Each structure stands twice: as C-alpha cells, then as structure tokens.
Image 1 (cartoon, rainbow, N blue to C red):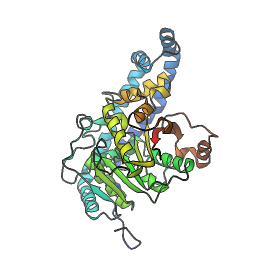
Image 2: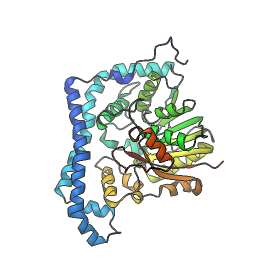
Image 3: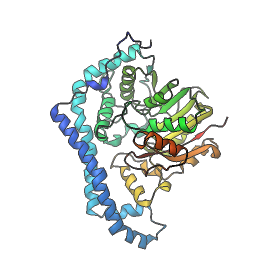
Image 4: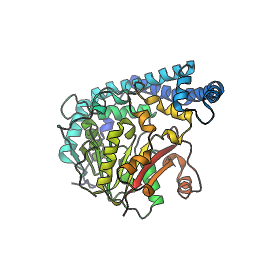
Amino acid sequence: MTLDACTSPPLDISNLLEPTQTELARQGFVSALRKHVMVNLSLDMHKDYVTNVKPTCVATHGPESVTPRDVKNAMEKRLLYRVWSSLRYNAQEMVWASVQGVVERALPKMNELAKDAADTNPASGSLRLNPNLEIPKYVSALDVHLMPGCYHTEYTDDDVAQGAVQFAGGDVFRGGFRHRKGNPGGVAESIANYLKLKHPDFKPKRILDMGCNTGKNLFPYLDVYPEAEAHGVDVGAPLLRFGHAMASHENRAVHFSQQNAEGLDFKDDSFDIVTSSFFLHELPIKSIKAIFAEAYRVLRPGGLMVHMELPPNSEVDPYYGFYLDWDTGPNNNEPFYAQFRNQDVLGLCEDVGFDAEQCIKLLIPNYGSFGLENFKDFVNEQRVAPKHGNGASWFIFGAWVQT
C-alpha cells in the first residue's frame, strides 16, 4: 500500500535518537576536533612537508620518482604527523563513543518501529533478510572504521543498533551534515544530476546500490529519477532494517535485501544503473572483481556501472596519496585500502567484460556546494571540478554496457 494524503507516514526512526545536553556537547566537541584535525592540522602538516620534507625526498628519489610510500616513511618521523595521526585516530573512536549511549536508550523503540515497517511496508518498498547469509571475513574479522560491532553485529531480535550507530555517528563525523533532501550536496545527488545533465535521454528504470548501508547514497537517485525502482543490498541486516524504516518514513519505495554483492540473486540484464559509494576500498581485489562481474551480469544493454571512490594514486600527487592512505591497516581498520588505490580501476572493469571504449573515469563537483549553474558549466566542459578533498568533488569511475 502506498501512502496517500489520509495516511500518516511512519515515525522518523532517526528522531528517536534524543541526546541529552551533555551528549550534544560531547558530539559537538568531537565534530569540532575532527574539523580541526582534518582542516587546520592537515594544512600545517602539508606546509611542513613542502618546507622540510619534500626537498629531501626529491633529492633522494628524483622529482618524478617520489611515491606515497616514500612520503610516508619520511613523514612518520615528524612530530606534527605523529600528533595529527594520534588525534585523528582518537577522534574516530570518539565519534562512535559519542552516540552509543543515545542509541542504547532508544534501541527498544527503534527496533519496534523498524519491525512494524518491515511487517507492513507502508511505502510499497520491501525488506528481505537472510539469516543464513555467510558474512564475509573482510566484514566479520574486524571493526571497519573502528566502529564497534562493524556493520553486521546483532544484539537482539529485529536489531537496528549498528544502523543507528552508523547513522548518528555519521552526523558527528561529518559535523552534522546529513543526506536528507534540502541539505547541500552528496555523492548520489552529484552523480545522478551529472547523469541527467550529461545524458538526458538516459532514463533508468531500475537502480541497484551495492553495499548500500542505510540507503543514504541511494535515496537521492529517486529525487532525480522518481520513476525508477530502487534496490539496495548489504550484508549488514541492522543497516538494512534502519534504512528500510527511514525509507518508509520518507515514502520511498526502496527494496532492501541482505546479500553479498559477490553473488546476487537478481536476474541477468535486470538493472539500468549499478552503483556504490565508499564501498570498494574495504574489499580485497578478488572480491571487487567478483562484484564487477555481477554488475556486468545484471546490467541491461545501455546500462551503467558507476562507483564513487577515493582517487587512485595514479590520479593524485605523492603527498595526497600518502594522506589518503592513512586509513590503511590499524589506523582505521581498512587493510585493503592502499592495495585498492594502487589498482588500474578501468583495467578492473575491462577484466570482467566491459569494453575499454565504454569506460569512464572523472572528477565531478559536489552538486550542492558547487551550484547548479557552475555544475551545468562543468557538464558542458566549460569549468573544471574543484580539487578533491573535504567533499568538494567526487572521483567516479565505471563503464557503460554496449547496446
């Protein structure tokens, strides 16, 4: 049943997260600390590199031969880097700690609300869970992003805890920036508007988001393509329950299913867009190839695979490559991060069957902050995208399927 004017939408599950004044203050402090680390101290650290480290690196390795690893080996000896790295690590842990108490208090009501949404599907969406799904080791073996419990852990029946922690922690992480319509910018909004302006005759009927999390980078596609049928898959049931409850409140007919994107249960040639955001760098290369093969299988002729990721080392200077690779390993529990960023991403697309001439790779501006007219100028190749960093632009790549 689709909601009509006489039917009240379900409650907003995120509104059940009610922090106390003390908790709000703590979250505000953590957001401010992250901003200080990621902006102010990062600028100071770059100046230290340019002034005190780069000349030695260039003299030792040659101006065209300095690698991110060379920069890392030199910067790890600098006091400022050690302070920056320590603060960044602790701020990341503090993000999750700042919302856990709020989530635990609200959890019984959130679980009840999410279960009701799953039972009734008020917006004509759906939630399909698979309790027998084997959680891949790259999720189950460590807490990615240092988030306790990672994406999949369940503490009670009909649990949404990890989805709520991810959602609320994301607000603190981004300093209060949410995905909701009316707020400026985001990955999906930027990609969808780019596609609509660049390819006005492209009218996707079915969209699939792999590793969809709570749906925050899937919902905006429906603002640009309201007639499309949206599907999201993830291995984390708590994320999907939380996302389905949000979609129900927002009257979005999104179909969530608990699946490993390496082996989907969708039919061949059944989607027009297959996408992901901030997903691939958390996976081993073998899994990425399997996921790309599945994307190729389920895409219709004329369809598009498009992923947003951190730019590979081939697209950035050695210092920025070093800076982005901080997340690798124990710093942020993302052991495949650097390996992924050393890949030829278009080569990975070609390996599973995409035609080299149909591959795409570019930097696009953040739609909301760049402004519509500037964004149109970018699409018409009259303006370039801002430098990557702090959400100013997004690196996307993928491929079209030949018709």
